Length: 286
Image (cartoon, rainbow, N blue to C red):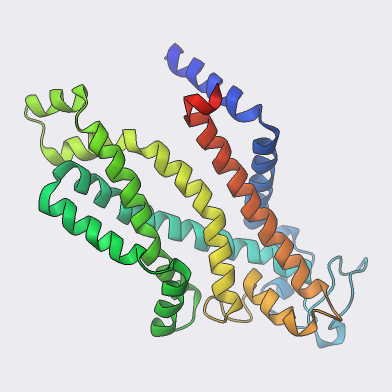
């Protein structure tokens, strides 16, 4: 128990001494707090949910509307706060789907090998052969434009990365002594894969998932901007940027502030992911 505590203290020491990582932690923490408490923090919750007020349309940032209003008179700040909930929920859903699909397939491919490995990896290569965003656009266009289909569309080209990560880890782990010992006493293969190998593969998966959170938020916003993700009047950052593009020269705040929200959320997750990768790599720690 004492060794685990000291290892955790060393982890925190290396993780928190990097100012960029600390800045990323602050950004991610603020993002989570805003997403969870959006109805409380939003000055106009009804407008954040989509209610319009035409008498207040296209107002510049002021004391009454800190970030201004859009073409339907909705408070931009409230819309951004509620949009964080949509982005967080969608990104977490996509991450959980790709981990649930890609990680077991990678472990099975690496441990079983042979024809099973060839089939799984060739299917992975097939999905990786297409640009991920282009494939997602094609899938959403076929299924219909909404947030659920956008999440499905992003999950399809994303899971092979986790399959490759866990397969490479499994190929090295299955030759270790603890796996040989488990195999020699008759432990079934499924138990070896998911009881002994999986816990040792989880670290690179966590690092990749943290980095991917930012990219998925950006990709979802891109699909929404194209009209293939969340649909109005849902508060979505991509939708807000799309709605403000016609007013970008005269009413810049409509698109600018949602873009800034995307910038800082993606930056936060990338910095945290880099920090975790640095902590987990002994050479980079030194």
